Amino acid sequence: MERKVRVRFAPSPTGPLHIGGVRTALYNYLFARKHGGDMILRIEDTDSRRFVPGAEEYINDSLSWLGIGIDEGVKEGGAYGPYKQSERRDIYRKYTRQLLDDGKAYIAFDTPEELEAARQEIPNFQYDASTRGRMRNSLAMDPEEVKRLMDEGAQYVVRIKIEPDQEVVVNDLIRGEVKVNSNILDDKVLYKSTDDLPTYHLANIVDDHLMEVSHVIRGEEWLPSAPLHVLLYRALGWEDTMPQFVHLPLLLKPVGNGKLSKRDGDKLGFPVFPLEWHDPKSGEVSSGYREKGYLPEAVVNFLALLGWNPGDDSEVMDMPTLIDKFSFDHCSKSGAKFDFKKGIWFNHEYLMAAPDSELAELFRPILEEKGISGYSDDYIARAIGMVKGRANLIPDLWDQGDFFFIAPTQYAEKDVKKRWSAQTPAIMEELIGVLEGIEDMSSANAEKIVLDWIASKGYHLGNVMNAFRLAVVGACRGPHMFDITELMPREEVVKRIRRAIETIPAPAE
Image 1: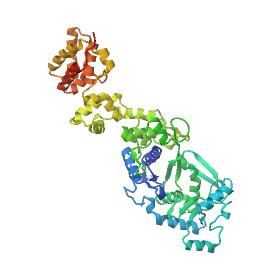
Image 2 (image 1 turned 180 degrees about the vertical axis):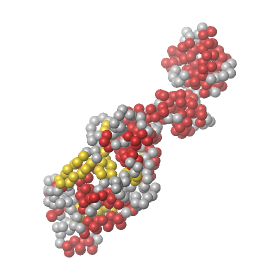
Image 3 (image 1 turned 90 degrees about the vertical axis):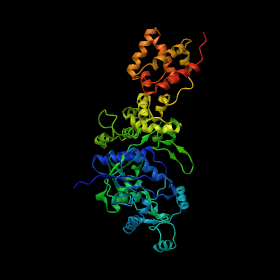
């Protein structure tokens, strides 16, 4: 019987969710949905010293905003819980004891000072079969001494006992067969008595097995740990249920070499977190894609193509399409440059495709922040529809269409110099009369009447229309002039023209 696809995203609540982690969660989600499987969110909070308040809620909020659905987790529940590792202590104790009883692990009492002394004494020191005999552990010490220390409550760790000169094979869906000799592996710590919690290595193996995870899809940085995890599956007698490993390519800096970092975003002006993050310790605020004005669908589409391609020329793909096309066959082995400019391009494409009514909902908070109210949803949506072609992010809609909501108090100097002559005020007074006489202010009708008037008077079309735009908008910019006046109340248009006549100084003859 074919094994059901079950994947897990297992972040640590040690701070905001990095965009690289988001991509890992996304690939897990796409793969699970492609194969009718389950998506698990497991919180790996075994490192109590690095726990950051609010980080777990941030992870959930980020995935929810992006549309990455969770089937089982702390919030959702499920048959395989608890889904928070700090609540699974009894489970980890059981398997720690099993490893010790089976001789697959041992207890070590070495202090930090003793470990540092060993590093100083032995070049390239690692805790393994060649060095463990000279250290303070249950393999090298008298059993009575070990018992005495345990009875006295001495602090200790449990280390895996790695046998030397074994070939360890990791089968990876992206990288193929990876072979490692066990001599390069050290006896990693699996459990610490100080906080009665396992380390990542033991906890994730136990949880993946008990939660029946079929595929472990994670970042490339965990590839060096994979041989150890294979050995742990063997040691616990679970080799037959070992999941399929998938190690994703790194997200690389947009410029230069190395892994993408927050510093790159700060330097080049793009977020590396999905949502804005307020650090509870330092008070520092880090920008997020949501607050910068990105649409979640655009972020998902952009991230999906960093290290994966659909096998054709498709670029703009919604979530169902991504799910349908997703396959690890088209994942890259090498790192993917984080082309943040491409992310902006994607957002523009999604802005253009989004219903104006939805954009209006996202834009209204900007109006509220500026103290602007009284505009209907329809008015806002129609205004946005006229200017979104020049916008990349939600805040750009304000930059492009602010004149729909506030009258100009200043006028672009270069446009005044070029478009406002000594005769302009009188012509604008005439235009007011023409506009006030139009019954149907629809764009096409108003345009015909005004252009016929300009022609009948022998006025210069460009000079009149640009002065008209300057008076209403404040600069020679914006969408079709008669589309603006169809939406904007006639009395507001007239009021703005009168203000321009009164405000813009007459040019010197």
